Structures are given as C-alpha cells and as structure tokens.
Length: 183
Image 1: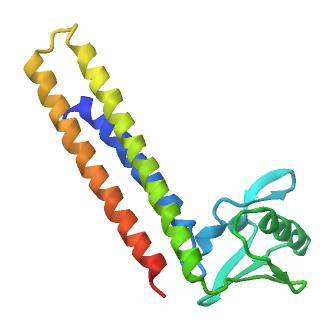
Image 2: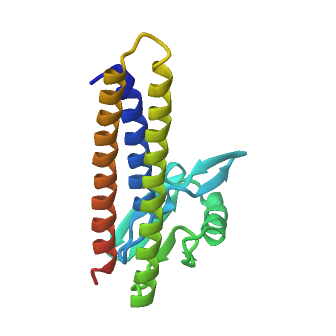
C-alpha cells in the first residue's frame, strides 16, 4: 500500500477499534467485565482502573464479582460504580462487591440498539472525516510534482478504504444489535 494511503488506513482502523472497544462496554443482558473498563478508583491519589486494584470475575451469567486486593478500597469501588452510568447498584458484603445484572426489558434492549446505531453513525462520520482530510491532502499534492491521474488514483483507493471500513462498522453494528436483542 502507498505510504500516503497507509496513514489514513491506520487512522480509519483506530476509529473502528475505538468503536469496537466502546461496544464492549455496552451490556447485553449477561455480565461482561468490560462494563467496568471506563471506571477509575482513587488508589493512593492516582485514578486506577478497577481491574488493576482487584480481581474481577463472572461467577454466574448475570453477576460480576469484584474482590479488591485491599479491603480499604471496597468503599471507593462502590462509590465509583454508583456514580457511573452502569445503572446497577453494587452489593457490598465486607469482602467483595457483587453487581447483579437484571434481565433487560424489551424497551431497554431497543434503547441500547438505538445507542449502538448512534455510536456506529459517529464512527462512520469519523471515518468520512479521515477520508475528507486525505482528499484535501491529495489535492495539495497537485502543487508538487504529482500528476492529476496519480491524485485521482489515490482518491479512488482512499474511497475504497472508506467503503471497506464503513462496511465493517455496519457489520459490527448489526452483530452488536443482534446480541442485544437476543433474549
């Protein structure tokens, strides 16, 4: 692949991977430890991911259990979960914290699918913006020793890359929506 195109391929890939990671934090009925990925706990003055201050396990399909390595962190972890947008009240028994995920209602599933589609659209916009930046950069090449044909080829290849990533985003959105709607 042309080095001039590689830059934009890398950026589009990062946009896709960001969306993929974002989808991992959306819960789909069963307990997924990735819903905790964005949460931080104050650990000796440093905001630290929950996975780094305790053992996060999924003992049952709809339960996440957090066993902190230091009991003093129980209250901080509980507070981080309560102030987050997870929407689940943690239960603290003095040694571990349990998050019990309720079965999703049909209405909640539809709301989550709307959220998934919105995030997919944002991902597509990011990819199209990268394409626009690439096309602008290619047009600036016209002022140098690059022929119009070569610029046209670069733009066509960039469009094919864009189409590929848009198609990947659509496929990712479809699979996540299907996962959410599956009871």
